[in-house]
Amino acid sequence: MFRKLAIIFISLFGVLLAVPTISPKMANYFPSWIKPIPLGLDLKGGAQLLLEVDTDVMLKEKYAQLYDEVRSAMIDRSKGVIRFSELRNTGNSVTLVVRDSDEVSKAKGRLRSVLGTSADISSSGQNLTVSYTSKAREEMISDAMSRSIEIVRRRIDALGTKEPSIQSQGGKYILVQLPGVDNPERIKELIGKTAKMSFHLVNENITSEQLQSGHAPSGTVFLDYMDAPGQKVAVYSRVEVSGDSLKNSQADFDQNNMPVVTTEFDASGTRRFAKLTTEHVNERFAIVLDDQVLSAPTIREPIPGGRGQISGGFTLQGAKDLAVLLRSGALPAPLEVIEERTVGAGLGADTIATGKIGAVVGVLFILIFMALLYGIFGVFADIVLVVNLFMIIGVSALLGATLTLPGIAGIVLTLGMAVDANILPFERIRDEVRAGIPTLRAIDYGFTRSTKTVMDGELTNLICALILFQFGAGPIRGFAVTLSIGVATTLFTCLLLTRVFVDYYMHGKSKKIGYIKMK
Image (cartoon, rainbow, N blue to C red; front, side, top):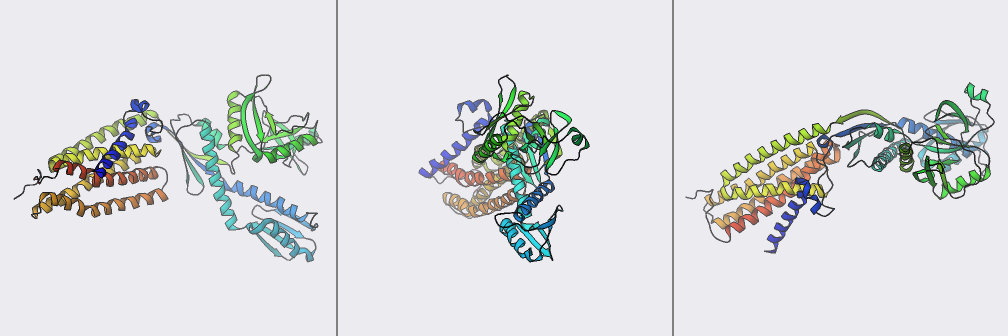
């Protein structure tokens, strides 16, 4: 008795989970954790962006860092300077010539101790070549992909976009689906910005003639002023404080009620920022964002607290957007939008409307067919089929799944399999009765002996769904999720709930089953 009550309770709970989705007006009467299932891009309308992660630029920056590390290792005074010449970054390696042939092995050992196993170090006479190993490059690319996905997610979440879908595709692409977004231009602008911020000292010794010539001396770069295109600022290449040390950023207003961006550094960034502002009072420093000078203020006094303020004639929205970019972190590699699709909400509404008509017509035909073919048992199967449908929707909503057209296809396929899962025990019962088995025993045999067949079929579908989820992406995963949920609910409703209805109807009496003509 307890087992039957538990089955009925679980079924009712699954049906209740689906009520906010079936009737959104009822959602206010349910707890906050029971929410309507969100609609996907193809049903709700919105934008879809396919982004390409430019890992070549990322690797180029990594080799620039390798160049600096090799140089620093060779001129490390604490361990003794190793004389060298012709240090070059070829783009896929760093080469140099050790002047003293007796120091070649010493140079290789020092580079190995600094770079570890991530680098290949080879020599030919006094020529050394340093490059990243293939394993290290693969790890860099994989890390850049995972970090890019996480940063894109944080940026989109900070903008308040609901139910975004962000997935990796093909090793170097990111698929972003934004249901309900009808103008993706601002989203594209924000998620596509690298947003690398750094602080540099301004080189005040550069003349206007040098700026106009465009030939920067060693250790100095000429960068464009963001608010004044064409105007150059000479800044030292050395990064005094990196944006990686930024802990928080918020849009705010200054004393003149103008929008600004306030910044706060972590412990390491605070120490470096305090050192910078203490040692260079009355000098200018440049705030560089994506290779453009955002601002170049003069340091009036030391700033020991790690808090700063960026001003630059922002609008309030511009200040908020910049704060989001800085707060979410810099992209490890540039992103390029290579494909963009926009689905209108009207198209999604038409899809839902036609889908409802098709679903209602299909379900009605199934219900009528089952009732005509199997009588009262067919009615039980119809009730169980509806409960199964509600449970799929309810469990999907509880797990936070998004309903898409492929997901609906998964539900339809599940319902078809559920009908088959009910037919198998009914036909087995009919065979047992025809063989002269008493009705109650025939029912027991029918459900017991068909269970293995039903489970084999459903588990096969589950394995297929898991494979699709593991290796698929986007719509394929949505189909796999609803199919997996449907397999679980079908096994529960068809093997357990149907038996509860049949047992209740028979109520221990050896009745003849209406749809079987017994001789």
